[in-house]
Length: 522
Image (cartoon, rainbow, N blue to C red; front, side, top):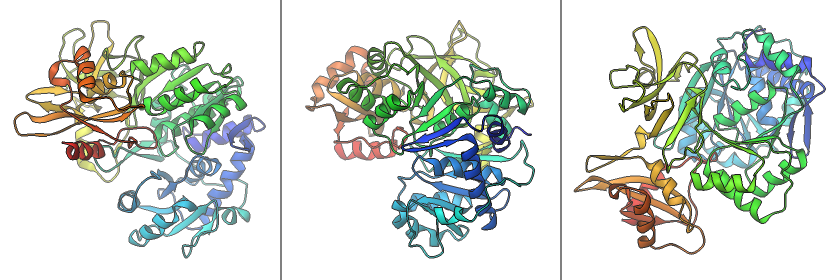
């Protein structure tokens, strides 16, 4: 057995095969049943010509098929590639080509976009349609693909150095494929409340001895946070629960029905509609022990609202990235409005200054959050970005996360925001996250995204795209609200109002879109 996710899942399935592994809607599979299901898909892909090291794109909503696709690809030493199901044809073509995918599993409701794009991606030669009969020539229906395939294993030996790729980004540019080895990824995203395993058998023992836990990642599986939450749950021997799409009422009904103990979301974009539904509905949340945000940080007002609605539940903010793994937890009372502070819960996390030297605690020197040790290998098909993001300093390889920060006297890390999204206005830096958090504290603001737009005098001016909550607040109201919390140069000079905010399926802001909307409003 290796530190390889397919090896480890098979070991867990052998140890606790009768335990419930996955629930989605009315479908319920034990570990043994899910393993057999994934074996059938793996044999089909291998018979279709997918070879070790080749890439299998997955363009699906959450469900049994997505989980099986992750397992099946890894079982035959292929590489799963997550595809954002909201992408338009040009974006799909970019991911198909950039990832060099040779096979694609897709939901039939995306067939028009797939059919229009696949002819321009010649490497993509095998298509499997989920949820219906495909009309694309040569595509095979998922159920047909599995019907005659073997449910036994019989796969070649795997390696801890097999590759796992997660495509991420797209808020300011095209997405990029983050490459990991399975061993490094497993250890980087390991549940920090458990001792890190020193041998693969420790993972199986951990699952075998795990208590009856039910865990629910609410983000779509095309987002790395949900995939990592999936593996964490299985390697704890837990029951994993999905909903096919994000719908706040469906999520709460599922939590009540399945007695979910822990949920994982991505920030305010999911927390706000969940809070609103919980406030107006009548749901039993007594089973819920932990409500965790990863990939996006709660604003203070949203966090406080969730805590009031769930007084007996731990509300946790996790800090990390697709490239770094999970690295830290928010310090109590830390919010974007008051200043974000995180306490590292893994080794080798620090802040590096412009000379790539660790920032001395309490010095006030500003640098970038960095991690060494268990980090990604780099970006697929992008050696230049890999070299910039993963520099080697004095023989040690670092990851620069892009988060601008300093180290406080007590060793906690104070994070100001993403350097790539900072707005330079008249020589002052404004971090969108801080302004967004303040705006969301106004009762007339449902959601907010802040960006910079060109300004002849100041270089850039701060602009806010607002989704109102009920009656639209006036610019003057928002100005007055912001000036109570922010320095004058941080207050938006332009407000654009939209009926619905555009975010990724995982809830991340689309800053390219926000900039266009703000420029039109100006």
